[in-house]
Image (cartoon, rainbow, N blue to C red; front, side, top):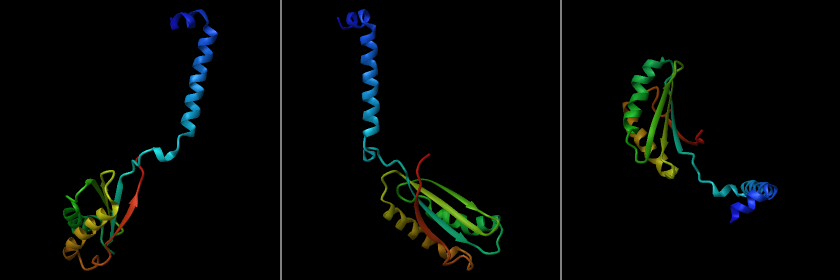
Length: 137
C-alpha cells in the first residue's frame, strides 16, 4: 500500500527522504554534548630524575623498582614506562574508565612510597606522582 504510493509518485519519495535526512542532521547538531559518555581513561603519571645516569641504569635502578610495586593497583588496565639517557624515568598508569582518579592517585602514591627505600639516594624525594587525564584517540 505505501509502496504503491512511492512507486507511482517518485518526487514524493525523494522529498520525504530529503526531509528525513534534514531532520536527522538538525537533530544531530542540536544534541547536547553532555549526552556523550566520558571515554577518556584516568591516567596517573610518575616521574623521577636520576641525575647523571644513563637510560639502562635508570631502568634497572629506578623504573623497574617502581613498576614492580605499582603493578597490580586496583582498577589498573595497563602501564607504560620510559627511561631516558638524561636520567629521567616516566611511568604512565592507565585505569579503567569510571575509576575515581583521586583514589587511584593515592593508591599509586602509596605504592611508590613503598618502593622509595629501594631507590638510589639521588632519586629519593624526587619521585613525583601527578595526575593527567588524556583522551582516547
